[in-house]
Image 1 (cartoon, protein in one colour):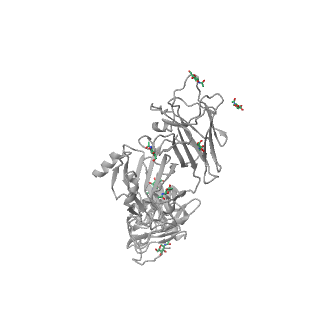
Image 2 (cartoon, helix red, strand yellow):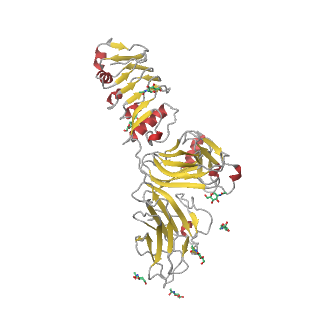
Image 3 (cartoon, rainbow, N blue to C red):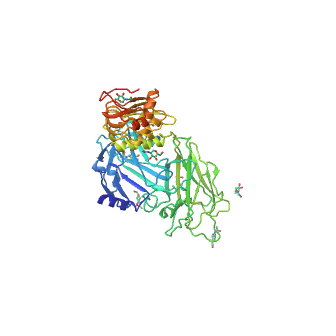
Length: 512
Ligand SMILES: *[C@@H]1O[C@H](CO)[C@@H](O)[C@H](O)[C@H]1NC(C)=O
Ligand SMILES: *[C@@H]1O[C@H](CO)[C@@H](O)[C@H](O)[C@H]1NC(C)=O
Ligand SMILES: *[C@@H]1O[C@H](CO)[C@@H](O)[C@H](O)[C@H]1NC(C)=O
Ligand SMILES: *[C@@H]1O[C@H](CO)[C@@H](O)[C@H](O)[C@H]1NC(C)=O
Ligand SMILES: *[C@@H]1O[C@H](CO)[C@@H](O)[C@H](O)[C@H]1NC(C)=O
Ligand SMILES: *[C@@H]1O[C@H](CO)[C@@H](O)[C@H](O)[C@H]1NC(C)=O
Ligand SMILES: *[C@@H]1O[C@H](CO)[C@@H](O)[C@H](O)[C@H]1NC(C)=O
């Protein structure tokens, strides 16, 4: 109890952050010294996998301690983290997964595997060597209250993960018509440090990597820069205080992005602030072209100590995406840039299982404490649908659920009736008690219901019996000594005794 309270109060200082140190021992937590962020063990978010420490020789003092442990998944092919952040469906999150192999398995063989966000491929993870840190980041507008991050084996070594972080963003940040943007690059241009900037300098804990443009001049100021409350991006002050500029006023800034996928759609966000106090006769004015297309406003002049963000309105594509910042004819000073970000649209679009089914099956899993490898989406991708259930695809719905011999005890939960596309339901040979639910009779597609071999009591609902008599439903209720058939509710009330006990304990009895 005490620990829970402590956890809650640590949490409230970062309400939009979920910070998971994968492989940290069950139930442990700590405050990171560099960032002051509270990290917790992943044990409550994942049901499979094993924890390991990386090789001690890589556990150096300069390494962020989140990388000291990993969780690896030698068994199942697909393994998912299920995180329910504070703000659910419709909110925008930055989701970051990080990987450092560190030879945790002493095999000296860095693996390759796939990363999924829910039912959609997010990206492939390919690790070069023990000390490479791979970071995958995606900005995602949640389609449900849960975020599922799944690691999928490709037969090229065991999947593992070091860190999983969720950061709540404002809905007007990184606005595009797409709900998933993968980070390609986020650069603190002209940085005079070798370290990335993140929380607390960045309220959203984005990672800004230092980048010095070769043969460019570095400008920097110790002055405060107005973050501009109208600018929702809020790039960190320390990032905005430095910039690069060409040496001569007439030179352009040219930056290239060479995507692996030339058909990919890319969005570029650039952050500017004037950090030199200009003389009266000086002007810094430029035009930005992305693949030759000018960005609005066509003539832009950064404001002194004030942050403005300019971005592409339409996505750019191609094998080389060229960003060119060119001084206008009346500019007396060279163009500058303080920070730049590039994102690629993630266009994998597999619709997930109907939310009603997902909620119902999750509730069933929780209520009956089912120990099954049920992770991620129940029905998709098809190859990884949950054991014991069958689905229709297009749209994905649960059509059959077999929980026979699954040690279910207690009452039949009404959640079963929320599986509104179900055709076959097999709950036989468990320890279910109480009544047969009326609502089964109203499941429109149900054509097979097996409740045999339980401890159910009372009467089989008349409407259900009627469906079984008309042949639209194959109903099996034998082996429930306390369960009775009655021809109808009314008759039961009127004529006591018009109650037929089922042939006791004959498994397989079929009532028609
Ligand atoms: C590990 O791979 C990275 C590239 O990801 C490379 O820069 C580095 O030199 C490699 N380190 C070793 C020890 O091979
Ligand atoms: C950055 O790294 C280089 C090379 O390792 C080093 O020479 C330089 O002093 C470092 N700069 C800072 C500010 O730490
Ligand atoms: C930087 O300047 C040097 C010397 O003038 C030149 O050799 C080099 O190619 C330049 N680098 C770039 C990226 O332009
Ligand atoms: C602006 O004026 C200063 C003197 O006040 C002069 O030194 C400088 O060359 C002028 N710059 C331009 C671009 O005319
Ligand atoms: C700027 O100068 C170039 C070449 O000197 C010229 O072609 C162009 O039309 C000028 N642009 C404007 C807006 O004056
Ligand atoms: C459910 O699974 C059991 C075996 O575990 C099998 O005997 C039974 O026929 C299945 N039920 C349905 C409806 O397929
Ligand atoms: C069934 O779904 C509805 C939402 O459509 C929900 O309000 C209800 O609580 C669910 N019932 C159960 C038993 O989960």
